[in-house]
Image 1 (spheres, helix red, strand yellow):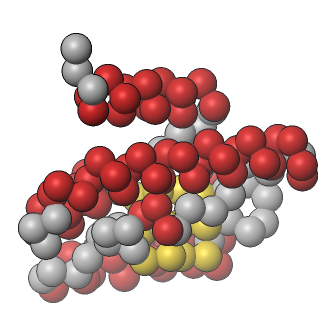
Image 2 (spheres, rainbow, N blue to C red):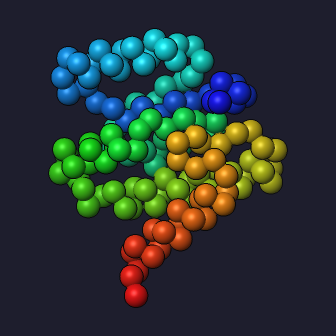
Image 3 (tube, one colour):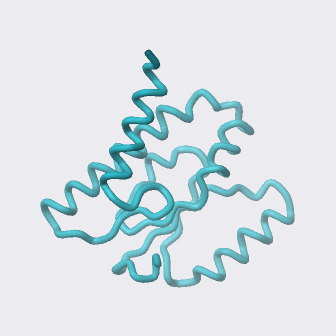
Amino acid sequence: MAKLFPPERWFLATATAFDEEMLDRIERHKAERSSLFQTIEEPINIDTAVRSSMVVDCIPMWLNNLFFTQRESDWEPILDRFIVALALGYWYRKRLDGYSGDALGAAVELTELIVLLATCAVLRHPS
């Protein structure tokens, strides 16, 4: 599906090579993507890497990275900023440049973003 994105296609890789098996897996995935995507490797601060036409791989690995680096308390503010960046990017593309794709793996449609934002709000402020 992501191959249907217009160029420039982005791939946000959150995996870290913590052993030889993971290093082999990462290299295999890079070869599979080859020149179809521009890769951004960001294991923690995914909110700083949001692009249009992006595949995010993978949110569970990102959470694992936060726990491994003892930054588990950072998951919520980073995810909040990530979702806001997606929503703002979507809004600007829709209003200013025309639709050019969205980030797969995180949110495909604005309605999903609204649900995610509402969920974050409820989790942050339980009644």
